[in-house]
Image (cartoon, rainbow, N blue to C red; front, side, top):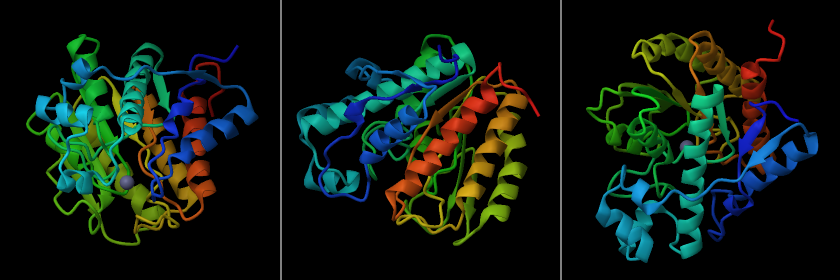
Amino acid sequence: MTSGVRRIVYSPRYRIDIGPHVYPTAKYEALHRELSAAGGWSWIEPEPASWEDLALVHTGDYLQKARTGTFTPAEIAEIELPWSPEIVEGFRLMTGGTVIAAHRAVETGLGIHAGGGFHHAFANHGEGFCLFNDVALAIRMLQRDRRIARAAIVDLDVHHGNGTSMIFDGDRSVFTFSMHQQHNYPVFKPRSALDIGLPDAVSDDEYNSRLREALPQVFASDPQMVVYLAGADPFEGDQLGGLALTRAGLLERDRIVFEACRAAGLPVVVTLAGGYARRLEDTVAIHRATIELAARTFDPAAKTG
Ligand SMILES: [Zn+2]
């Protein structure tokens, strides 16, 4: 028997065929393979988010286009993914994965999704490899079902969480925190509740001290759950990132987030978000370290200290 926190939401169908692309959907499968080989994990197969539920976040017009493949060429260029029924289904499935992980977080204190973190999806359009905003949907569904009233998002992907910030703009029930590389995509960065735009080439110590300083402000919003976007792309070897964190520095980042949430008694949902290292194994190792640390931190049976 694996303990309650050693369960991971994942599907082999996350390896979506998007053609030759910088976004390696193979990372999900590689992560599953490695963790399965290490042993001690069990897996939860998600259900696709329903079109009805997706309407809690997205406009009817946008969902209609996604469903029927009637995006304009300009819209496809902005999403930076081809359209196919398989791709839309894959993203609905990954969105459903974050929804299940969020339910698990509320029930057990930790929900791990080996996927998700599509923070560039807006209510009315997709961008930057993101079709549906899984993080926003998971929060909206838990709020609708009165499981939580307030949530906080800790978005540490190297790119600003533009879609999420815009979706929750003016919504005081969801505190959006994004720490990102300032001079990087997206050019238009709608205001989050807290934004930290870092200069290029920031390394471990500066990054993690900025994070430590910021978290009290996040917790001051009195959230009942934290959704963590543990992007692997602040890594020094990332093709789409311009920060200079090492793998050790990224693990320390994760530790700061998890320890702070545990100290505050807050359930955490882990999503992977981006990761485009020149070597796929680096991206996979960073995500794996995040997941293993999350389970160690939130395992009630584990020794502390
Ligand atoms: Zn990113």
